[in-house]
Image (cartoon, rainbow, N blue to C red; front, side):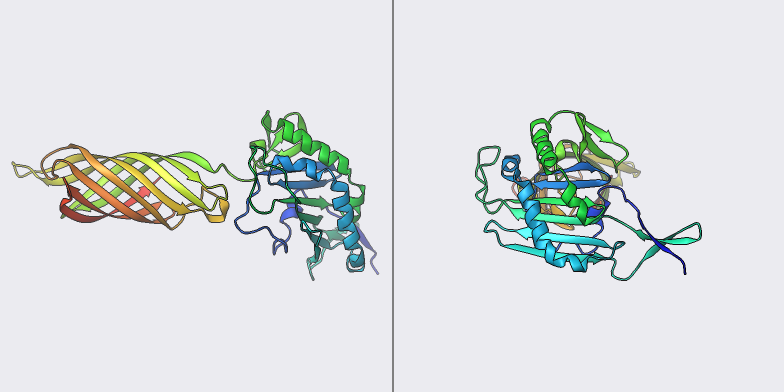
Length: 368
């Protein structure tokens, strides 16, 4: 009978955080946003990913040893359920401001096993690290760093990725809190690309602290400027009119990243085709300057993601024209937008002076 040798295959740090296929059991509210996310290397392949709502919360987390001890104490009755040395375990622990605690244990995988053949013998492979996620609410949270009081509960998360659950007892918790304080004092200083770890960033003065973004931000910036170049086709009366457009837009989302305001200015030359006095087909260029304003929901707390329908409208003014196919002082008003990837469809209508000669139309725009 072949001898079975248990072999731990260490995965890249951080992969265990994503190993749970069904996500965490205990969650923050859907519209809740963390401001900071950093990963701290604990050595021997172990690490912890920390989510913070505000840097002012770090002093309240200096008792990390008691937070971890409480989790291990709650986990003790479940030890008999964690006897398989090659299984991955995902532990979810939650503690609210009143001290009420909940715990969940998941085994990954439930049935599958992998083996490594070494010198004719089979070695059972542990495909990933164990994960211990500690979610909590800070009781009586301090004022935010900007001096304002936050509304509602303030959450924190510590996600430990360890080779085995027992390693959690050997982790230096003082080192974690010291590095969190160092991060708070130096987060705005130099960060370097961490090419060996998924294109993340690392602090120049402490390479053991890494983040998905410079400064340790948990999300992309809420506000940003965008430059848009597009081609379009639209109709004006019975004319088919191609055009190009160039615009600059400011995108501003709310603090919870659930809603966004868009403000922009654009230039759009459009071309009409008609026969001239000599009976030859000629193109007539007409340039619009437009102002845009709109609102749209934010998907998955990512302001960079586009949505299929937005309440965006624009008002354009004809400041340059060729020929007399368009009246002087012509305006173009659009309202609402349907989007699919980089293709936009806008209903619109033209008028001149005070809503005289109203003409409906539709415009299809392809952005780059």
